[in-house]
Image 1 (tube, rainbow, N blue to C red):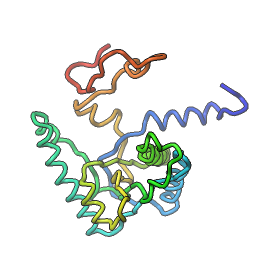
Image 2: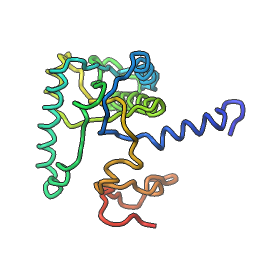
Image 3: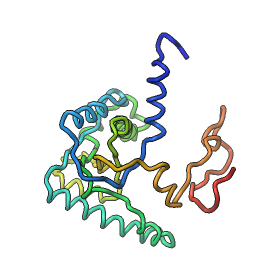
Image 4: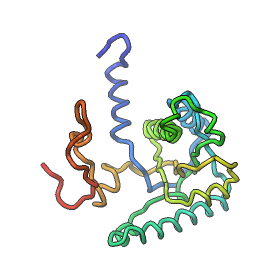
Amino acid sequence: MDPQNAFTPAETAAVYRAIHERRDMRHFVPGTVPPDQLARLIDAAHHAPSVGFMQPWRFVRVTDGDMRRRLHALVEAERRLTAEALGERGDAFMQLKVQGVLDSAEVLVAGLMEGREAHVFGRRTLPEMDLASVACAIQNMWLAARAEGLGLGWVSLFSVADVQRLLGMPEGARPVAILCLGPVERFYDAPMLQTEGWARRQPVERCLAENRWPSAPAETGRATGPEPV
């Protein structure tokens, strides 16, 4: 630890606690997110790193009840199509709670701004770095929400074209996530999909190698048996 630049031990522990206790939340309780608290979370997202400092994220706060119901309908339509695409796992998938659009205090749609082709710095060979930048902004918001005791869930089950039309997005702009945010009764002890037996966290050793790509074959992470000791 560099004593000159490091946080205090208590501050460092708090950062790691937020990382390890962050959950993709689906179950919300009635309540609100005060305006100043919401502003802090948006500000945290806006301080994320971005390639070429392009800051490609845009957020739409959905406060209209009818629009929220239409978003929910789009998610449900894609949920059924996803179940069909999953084949034998479709029935198990349909038993999962995959969103809280109608239940959470706030709904935000995070997206990519239009005109991104003008930003070449860092994107000439990796144009998808704009998406990576938005993901960093969402993660910032997620960790800040966890630190403030609020749940946040990332919903990616939707037709991109349908959400573009619903929000009146200009050509080139693209939705990335429907974010459900609000008070929760409790945070899951482990990721919900792990608890439900859908998948499990892979050993970190499988994701790390030195000087070359990891040689072990990748696993799907699907929970097919007891967790190895």
